[in-house]
Length: 497
Ligand code: NAD
Image 1 (cartoon, rainbow, N blue to C red):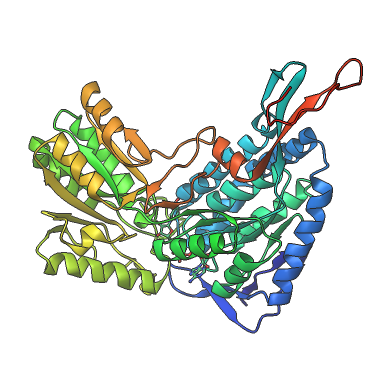
Image 2 (cartoon, rainbow, N blue to C red):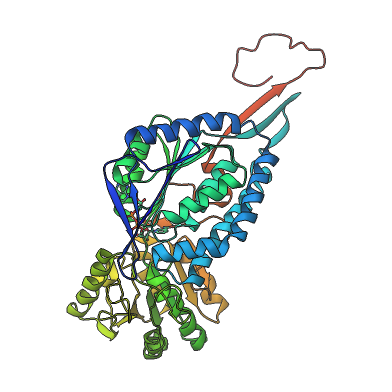
């Protein structure tokens, strides 16, 4: 019998009483493994009200005590690392080792949240005027909301609520309805770490639940990660409702390969960055730009990628798993067909792929196109599948122009042995996260996750110092304590005297 996915509302686990039921399937065979009932309007209201009430107490808890909850949480997440990765693999199809990486990149953010004391330090200036001091505090906002995608069901929720809550807020998480069991297990462990009841709520559902959170009078911030159309909708609707919004969206990430790079390094790095996780990563490399003579390496890149074999999550030989659902597979196959129809050269064709024993799964084999142009759909659309597009470029200048003309700006990398080329690229490229001889440059949490252009709507990014600013408000105090206790005379001007 399929597992019933619970909601966490007011510190209680409940089934949810919405009439709409969603099935969670194993992407390797499309068998139903769990079901969830969407939250009703009343349940969403209860979740927000409980988080709001708990936050009133929580904001008064000493900052070091809040940090200690995060320390215990980090410890529990590490203790349950394999268990979490197993749940995650079963509902996403990710290979076990990749699922462990998904959890690990989230644990790193919890470690940052455990340092919240120093992150929340304000500023001081003595004698802003004679005998007057200025100083600022950083204070929590209230109830923050997270809406997360299917492709990192551990890491992305962990980008959000640990830091928001460490800053003194309550949090309502609406995870992807396609893989809600990992976030639920994360939430259980959070309570086990000592978080007060109700402070973190998890409500499941689709657009209707999201819309209620976007319009709710008691939610202050919205953090979203997902596709471009939904990201634009969330940003517009959230800001229309006067909320602070950060919306991380789609991507088309380019790797520029210079002819002076080490060929074997390029091949090794490109294999994992393009087809790892079946290409379902917002930082996957989906376009490789071969500059000058480097284009001679394309056949060897294709041969290496062709050797990668998809498989089920617990097959240690599998390079990656299935796509998340049949619609995602159909979309990727349609794009592969469009590449052939529009004249790209298909060097490796993964459109006819099955895995023995799992014939009904959402499999797409590794696929490589050469001679791709910017007029083609495979170049212009986010494929989110194990497909690499190879483009030729005459020079580094042309490569930079190509990357900068792309509407996305999440991640990019350059492979070269020239410091001058790397310096020019990092300086001139209009992309928020740049790797130099690193294919997937996801910043560690002491920095922030800083996508640009159509990959991000908002100003303050995920985790790091920017997220602390996002989840807090600054209060500035100007104070005078005269030794006499008396301030003589009147001041009819705006200046401090
Ligand atoms: P999605 O946009 O379909 O869903 C994301 C969330 O929004 C889910 O919780 C979903 O329930 C909700 N949602 C879906 N449609 C909605 C609607 N019409 N109104 C309100 N809410 C809605 O994204 P996905 O398919 O789960 O994730 C894949 C996408 O996420 C890709 O485009 C990928 O590039 C992007 N992504 C971006 C980043 C980043 O940091 N930039 C990271 C991971 C994934």
